[in-house]
Amino acid sequence: ILVCQYSSVGTILPSMDDWYNLTPIFDWIHCCIISVSLQFMIALLPLFIQGMRDSLVFSGVQF
Image 1 (cartoon, rainbow, N blue to C red):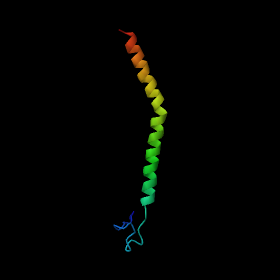
Image 2: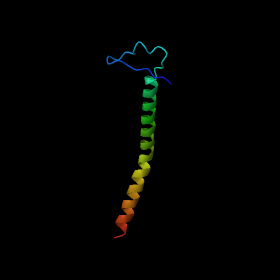
Image 3: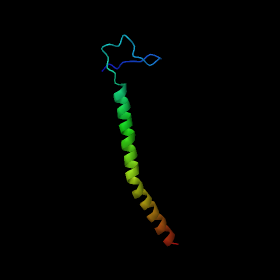
Image 4: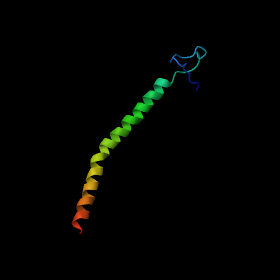
């Protein structure tokens, strides 16, 4: 797949007529990866906190 390139100003170079502008697709994939990662962290945070709390409670009882 031929991906078009940009000039320093931000416009697509004129010789890139038959190339694909995949920059928005790559940006979309990047945002999806970040959002899915944040969702997993938010979903698993209560489980992690509960596990840490339980281990601290049990370690405090054993002295």
